Image 1 (cartoon, rainbow, N blue to C red):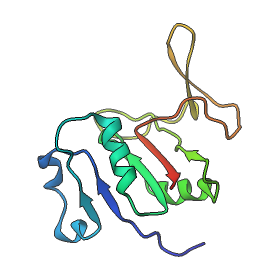
Image 2 (spheres, one colour; image 1 turned 180 degrees about the horizontal axis):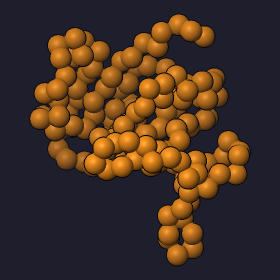
Image 3 (cartoon, rainbow, N blue to C red; image 1 turned 180 degrees about the vertical axis):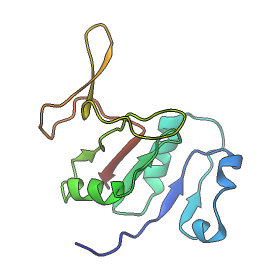
Image 4 (spheres, helix red, strand yellow; image 1 turned 60 degrees about the horizontal axis):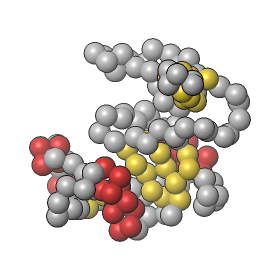
Length: 138
């Protein structure tokens, strides 16, 4: 399907200074929701999911960066499977330039001593989801 993706945003957790970079036309597609008290990231995401109206829920934390084509690939992988949660390949980047270092694996894992590692077993199953960037259907 080559039809354009309609984007409707919902910002459930952001500082006022972070919202300053959005233009008036951006705010036509974004709804800012503030919780009455600090409740943490997970509750903010849950509240955002409760009031979102789109077909897909896309979570992107502030420390994550999308590369061109992310959204289209995530939606294609989700398909019509309402039980599928899709995460992209997480790129390893240079902290000072944001340039990709080159992937050493596509899935993350922890060994028994809690050492973080990358691996690939060429299946669709993902043992650990990155909570910072993921997509699911409603």
